[in-house]
Image 1 (tube, rainbow, N blue to C red):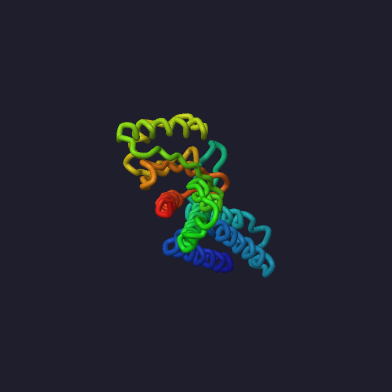
Image 2 (image 1 turned 120 degrees about the vertical axis):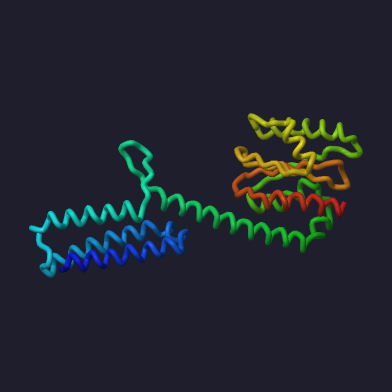
Length: 251
């Protein structure tokens, strides 16, 4: 009778976990380890109580082993999906994967909020950087970039040049960027077309973005945004492009 009661408690717990996984999937994977530990704790405590009250005895070791086998089977088949990483080593990585994913997404969301708030602050304080000594575009953009562990370098591609000359200047600047940042492979021609058409180019492997802008003070500006010790996001490129136009409106 006691064994049936213990199994009933474990069954109710498993059904509760299943319902939790259906309706709160992301939270489920985040606390999966704790749920598994609790499952085993209920089983072990249940066995201990059974021995103390006399419903289970050492002579029932075969039954206890069978129960343990059932518990392990339920853990593997219901709570986890095994990922076989090595032929003799089964690693269960669901919990870690989803926990890492959630934490990364949370970090990105927090950074986006901080960066958007700081951009709003810069817009509210628009005239301050231009009061007093002259500020270069490079210095102005780095006010934002350095706040988030990034760096910006600016290439101004001249004034009043023809389209063909501008395209050639973009390719030449890309070659300079390749050498400056030790980029091994860069499809200069395709990227030059993208930049000419005002597309932001993200080089994921290099943690670097190239941001084109067409302010009135120059035919084109290429801002290279590089991650130093922060998190580089697409919103950074958008903010840098907007700051280029904002700077141009004051000069």
